[in-house]
Each structure stands twice: as C-alpha cells, then as structure tokens.
Length: 216
Image (cartoon, rainbow, N blue to C red):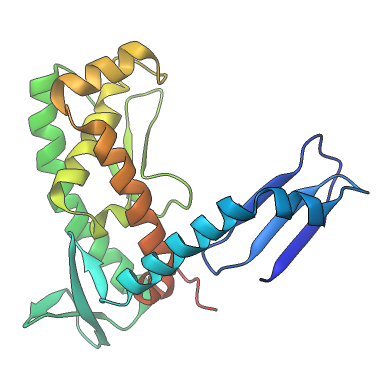
C-alpha cells in the first residue's frame, strides 16, 4: 500500500484514503505512523475493498441520470445519445457548458414544483463545478447545484433539491431541519448513503475526471 505522510502542527492524526488509492496520514511530528496504520488496518481494508467496487462500477461507462453510457468526444455542439453511446463536444469548456444546460433543464422544474409543495421561495438557481458538496444554499436564498448531479438518478436529484430548499426554512442541520426534509422525502437516510456511493464513482470515473480536468 502506498502511504503518504504529512507532518503538520496538528493535535490529532488524520487518516484518509484518496480516490486514486493513496493512503494519506496527517500527523504531528514524531507520531508513530506504523502503529496508527496497524490500529486502523481493518477500516483501511474495508475502504480499499469499497474503492475497488466503485472502480469496477465506474468502468461501466459515463454515468448520466443514473445510466451508464459509452462516452465519445467529437466535434458536436450539443449532447447526443444513441444506442448506449453518449456523444459530447470534444472541447472541455463547451462540453461543460452544454452539460450544465442539460442539468439546469432537469433541476429548474423540480425546484419550481417542490418550492410550491414545501412553501418556500428560493432565489436564483445556478449550476456550478463544486469539488466538495452536491449543492448549497446562500443566505440570500440562491441555490447552487453541482454539475456532478448530472450523474445521478432523478430520485436522488430530487432529494438534493428538497434538501437545499429545506435550508430556506432551517439554515442548519438541526433535528427540525431533518424532520422538515422527511415530510417531503421520507427515504432521505437511504438517499444520503447512495449519494456517498455515487460521489465515489464520479471521483474515479475517467469521463468525469476529464470533464473536471483531473486527468492523471
């Protein structure tokens, strides 16, 4: 196993397993890294198996709205789907633009419908490239959705929409917030677990790595 150690003035050691399989330890100087890894060996083995499963899943193709397609990049101006093949522009900037438009066309009606159902009034809707979260809600009520949502089945996109709209009532993740989410998306606990799995698939997927400029 490849282990990368960073010695920093931190109080506690931290262990991470990166999507590329690297094990990263951040620890104070003089810390016994070998003993630390031994202590967390079972967790690491479990996470490595999970990562391998995600890699196998990602090999099915480029995920789009919960389905996997063979990805082709050509001199096209939009998105084409035919016989299991997804064709997008070969220029990354244009590909991102047309895929953002595709996602926004899916999300905008969901925001409109759930806003009425939930009794909230959101501001503007944005589609952004975000590296750490699926979506966010600003203090002004504007909603930003991650382009990565494009990979998800619609039922999970609906959950993310409900989650962010709920922040217009409750800014934190309090008990009241989750109770409010549960009124409109009762199966939110399962959805959250599925989102973690999909995030992992996107992290290791070659097509998404190209789209986000993360090629190795």
